Image 1 (cartoon, rainbow, N blue to C red):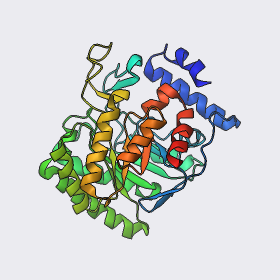
Image 2: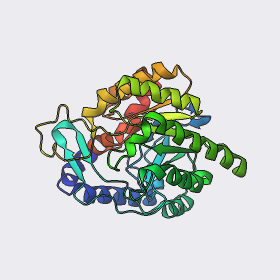
Image 3: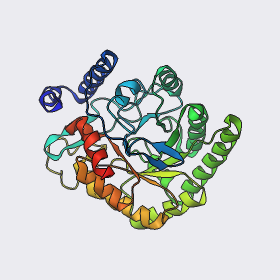
Image 4: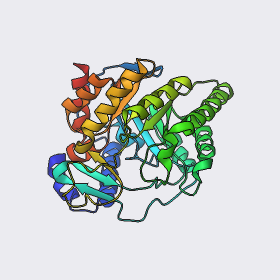
Length: 335
């Protein structure tokens, strides 16, 4: 049905369309109305976790964890909610979300708008979902970049008992100076503190929760190798490649292309796959890679897998293709 509904949704402001769509999904789930064909079981073991299939939801679509059960009904092998920050924040001023339909792309400058970690955890506790749940954490915009580690460790401590794995988002282009944490000495200092906190929390709670680091696509090959070295050195559990891009290559003359923010969708496909390939070479199998960025069809997912990704995540592809993309990609990766 989605190809019939999409033109109507695209008449709405993107944030309004998002609310309408997810409210409808939640209603359908509560009424037991199937809205997506279920993928076949294709268990994949990554980070010590067994995923029912290798296709997951990327962070950003359910920032506050308000639609967990509705999203689970679509057949994902895992869900990632967030990005959530220690304290609530409104994000950047509206408008902050723009469609580029002819390019199958989106530009967003949301700015980690969310209701804070305490609210998200209430939603997690109230959900029936018992599958693999990733929680993506970030720093508050008001926190100086030199104090970012404190926000990450605060959020990590809060979500640790409730997550299957935790993603550290240091790659959004919409929080000032955030991407600086990926470079130089900053990345090593951040990862060392996160590893120490993870170790303490594992002892405290009697369970080990893996940490994944989400990185940007706008890194040169030397920066990717430096990141890979740091991820290995500090014994991170996975890397997610990639977040959105600041590049406008291929969309320069389209309406909204001049808007600031991160570009996702088809224009990101090749760039994110290149980062995955470079990471795979640098990591030499020591860390698993979760591929994200520009997966609009089964072939895109297969290319991510061929480049070195063990799992993939969808975001913009869902907006343009609907939930049938989940089964399409899962079946292709199972072949």
